Length: 236
Image 1 (cartoon, helix red, strand yellow):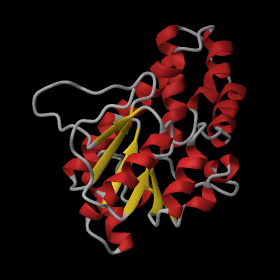
Image 2 (cartoon, rainbow, N blue to C red; image 1 turned 180 degrees about the horizontal axis):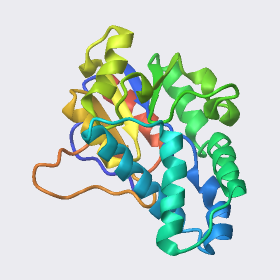
Image 3 (cartoon, rainbow, N blue to C red; image 1 turned 180 degrees about the vertical axis):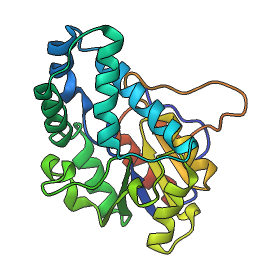
């Protein structure tokens, strides 16, 4: 069901999409965790560790590429569960990360926004990669005028510098940006930096009902309704 919190973006001109899990389906990695851990749900534990330690690195003033942290988080998760991870497993992780498919509805939503006149870019924690990039492999790259990586800032989201990087590179204000992400920590960071935000409520991600936590301006479970809501906000 579409949730409408009552606040809508004040016609931001540029829509900034998170990539991993928001546009691309990370359940593509589940077979690796099923084989290595005999439990595909360990994927979520690994991903949570990856996000936790990426943010920890930023808070500590350190930086290591997201992919390298991903490998380290896999080895750490294996140590926690007392299982062995081989070089073949590491190679499979990298291969699967680079070939994640697009979520159903991603291409139609992006097409609607483009037709409606919005500028579309991406902002990802992942470092830049050689062609074909994950977005190219998923068939989504042609929708975006620019793709941004936090490696330029040397900090991971939700550090404010990552969102400001996009605004500075595009010569706009952060208030001209609207971040679309399925991670609340990402939308919180964007809002704190002055951006608008849309939260996609996928499985394993939910709102945080706590005092002082800003509510995303649009909350919806589907990318197609993301497009509809953003377009409707401009027309209202």
